[in-house]
Amino acid sequence: MGMTIAEKIIARAAGKDSVRAGDIETVRLDQLLSNDGTTHLTIGMYNKLKNPRIADVNRLVWVIDHNIPADSPKTAGSQKLMRDFAREHGIKFYEGEGVCHQIMMENHVCPGELIFGADSHTCAYGALGAFGTGVGCTDYLYAMVTGTSWLLVPETLRFNLSGRLSEGVTARDLILTIIGRIGANGANYKAMEFVGEGMKTLSMADRISICNLCVEAGAKTALMEVDEIALDYLHEHGREPKACFVSDPDAVFAAEYDIDLNEIVPIVAKPHFVDNVVPAAESLGVKIDEAFLGSCNNGRIEDLRVGAQIVKGRRVADNVRFIVVPASRSVYKQAMEEGLLDIYMKAGAIVMNPNCSVCWGACQGVIGEGEVLISTGTRNFKGRAGHKDSFVYLASAATVAASAVAGEITTADRLL
Image (tube, rainbow, N blue to C red; front, side, top):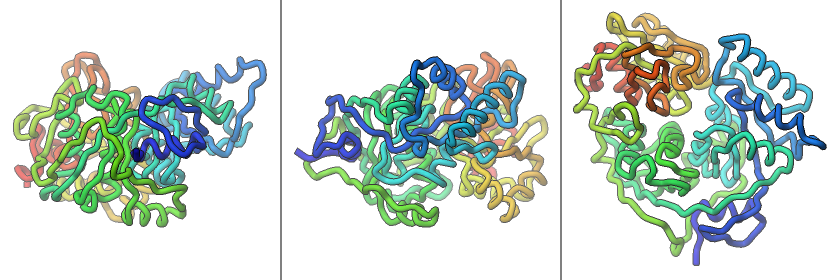
């Protein structure tokens, strides 16, 4: 019996010829990511160990991205702890460089790797054929100290993509459609694998956006076959793959879904659940107080180009705050060189430094009681972006930018 991509990566990490869904395997981790959301907790536990040690410091990547610059003395203290520990132990460390997942994709992730990240959207790495999964700081500590962990081999849901997204429709609309179709628990502890001719029409930015949000359907990880587009991206960033896997013809899948990209339309996820999706056309006219374009899901240069094209020569609506946050320093610099940041600022947007920002909801751009946010962030749970009685709608960069100008939820085709 053949294996899926997920099974092949776990088999490689376990040093075995084969594994099967439902097996529990001891695995060796290729990389371990942590950010300022929980690293101070990991350090606190590490310092209480009888014989503290780091198995392989070269496998660790630490990033300050959630609250940067620090927003309080408490935050400053936890970040100092992280900064000092990284310096003392020689851990690869980024501060002010951007969102952790964008940094990992730009600088570290390689096909075939098994990566733990102390952040739920680590599944984004599947866009490069790597098994990325989020863990808590206790599991992270064990892996950091031993270099190993255990995994229950997940079943796989396969999504066969055909066709091409229509003009004005994005990969973000695609993954929100899929989450709405299978539900927020539809992929619980499963791998979501994407294949098909439709994949060839999707850029790396599209693929990262798709894999990144799979955790919102409960997925353990997301995976894509490594093709020329992925390899070109990897080579542009100076890396070579560890291993490029595809699922065997006789691999067993828990379920398969056929998705025609031609049928996808602009989508909005309404409060307060990511699977509460409707066509954006059904939410037209909802008044907004704030719009956010950024995050590890939609803060890449391609997203900033889309938004800038829409707001160019226009003004952000009165009484709307439009916050634009590039996902990394390199994206910021490129957007600056292309004149995109000027376009946003002339339109009345607020351009922020690369960080998690509004998506994290604990620092920049929080919204107040009764306020409405339309966002390219990852989640719209109650209170996610501020007051517990506020409202978050999720949409694509195009829909967010158009809504910022209109002052209400609208789509780019209607605005233009």
